[in-house]
Image 1: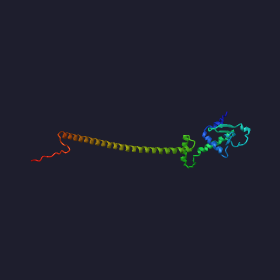
Image 2 (image 1 turned 135 degrees about the vertical axis):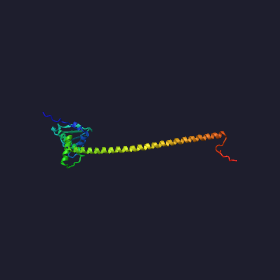
Image 3 (image 1 turned 90 degrees about the vertical axis):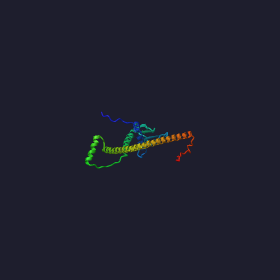
Image 4 (image 1 turned 180 degrees about the vertical axis):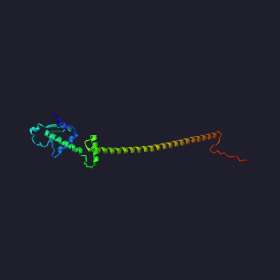
Length: 221
């Protein structure tokens, strides 16, 4: 017994890949030859239905096949089975066009040897198209360039880091030298201050005016 594909109802179809489906339905409604269009009921609510039955009575046998679905945005769609099947076909075509809209068609001429190698890589990896082989090889090449560039950048950063480290070491040595000089000057100043204080104390002890005191040599008689 042959088992066919299960029938897909309108509601399930509309609520899978929701945004893409609504984009398609909206464009289909706005096309001059669209299968569906936006309509308003007696209460003024907008819904989507078949264009060919606009302002026409729907045959009873067709009416029995109508399905209704509620889109994610709350809008209702009401179409016959025939229209639903046509919408599915148009959607597949629309989806294919959208998926391929970013592609650019190119024609290349390869040597027989290169063509054989491309075919071999395609079969070996189980890829569906030879374009995938070319895309893969381009990506490998670009990744290698990126890796090389990254390696150069890392090496350059390492060199710069070493230069910076050397400069820091040099500056630290200079700071250490300046600290040593400052310490020596401080010690010298302390010694001079101590000697001055000792001199002033001696002068005071012996009643000598230290500021005006001068030592003179006695002349031989």
